[in-house]
Length: 426
Image (cartoon, rainbow, N blue to C red; front, side):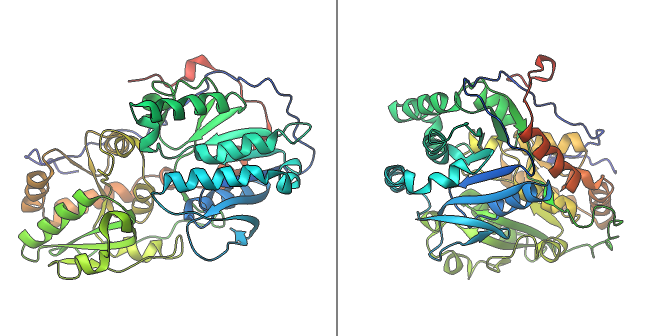
């Protein structure tokens, strides 16, 4: 990779390393006995329509489990299946309406005995986020023998980090409920070191399951050789997925406008309306910025990522907290299809990409860092960045069927403690 003589970005090549994320303690007084045959798993989700829930259910099915999904939804239409598995729809809730979600959970607890068979006919319950952990704990109490309970948390809600009484109560509740669980599943090492160990102080095993792209049907098929992109200008940045960062919109729109046509921005996904209002109207007249609406995941991923040079992997929605700790889906999606990721060097995404030796590492203040990078970018240096991404093993970005089977095997067996592989707070 060519050496660049400016500080707008950093790009280093470090051998691919697996970050060890290990176990703390198993803390469950219940006797749990998974049944013989295919492992039966109940996935409790806060949004049955979420693509991440569909990916998790599909992953468990690919691992050989028999899966049922249950939970609320954020869309008006009822959800009957998730990844072709049966789903039990608890009703609709709304984004950014935490009080409404609490009321919905309380109402469901009152009628929980109507769903008793849902809990008794399962070996493992995976509860996504704390509201589902409440339902899972109460539903599990109806069972004998008790199914295994796993707490899955891939985002740390800002209220969980509140320094006032609300945050204290929520963290206390999480600690109490986690005593009934046998493990936590999360997606980023920083969630472990910065939250589960340092703040929440949960004393149960923790497993890292990254937000990789699920590819289970072509494991033995050689990967497609992707032709190199036509270099810019214009250089195209793709911002895809959950669109929730107002600062990113401002930065990218200013960059596109000031570049006078040398940089373009394409946005696709689901903007949070409570933050942006009418997003389509807001960006309609921004020079160099196009909003092309939602997309299908995973069907549309090859086309949308191959149509851009760079993947915007920066999120400052909750800067210093969840946004600084997460490893977003778009990092893996963009990497798989050769879009060069752009990240902040100071957050977990930047550290992850630096370990892999790929990506554009930007510094604060972001505006001059971005302008400086594109002012010196050439077709030759871009090709180096692109080749670095494409040269990595597919396993860096893709979850295979063998990984799915290993996860289901782990869910079916005991989670033991190995202090040597503990991930300690930074």
